[in-house]
Image (cartoon, rainbow, N blue to C red; front, side, top):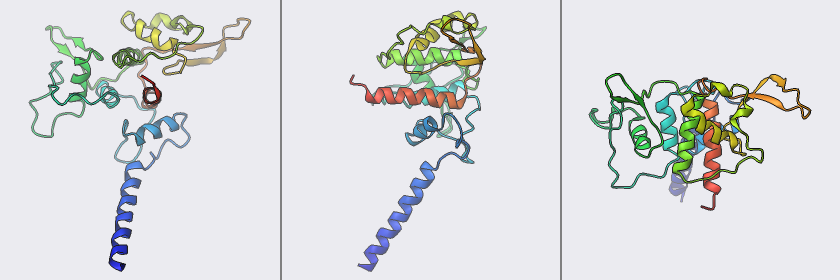
Length: 239
């Protein structure tokens, strides 16, 4: 009996230590506006941090990292799915065992599903540029395609929430306008703008003015919030 009790206590200690290591809260998010979203996505293994247990929420994020996070929200590829190399700078194979970049499979899978696109180089090749930082309008475009891929329709705001409501709407690139437009219309706050210097339009209703800042690089905290909203909606949907 004593031996059994010792074994059970040892097992409990191991489980407890493992859980603490896996779910230890990031050390730098205590007073951050996105703490709830960050913690939830950490526990769901959708996002991860740095070796020093920080999350660095205001850091930017690369295209490869962003693709990897969205990949974790996808259904598992079919067992017989064959990964294809879709970009000249994001090979699926050709690496020594275990040495492929973490983003290699996610990037190519999302490209095959029509969720991410790349750039054409001067020689006609196709590049993904996985180590480039991703902008807010790039993120919006990819998220919009992801939602279409998931065949999920988010509720739209009663007033339409048009892109024109952003005072910097003219800075949105032509290729990104559709994606930003779709996300701006959604009433669940999946991707919103920034209050412009506490300013107001001067209209009789005192409407506040917002910027989208499409050319700004999106932050890790903003991405955590976006995927948190998507995760909740997809998991509570009656689809």
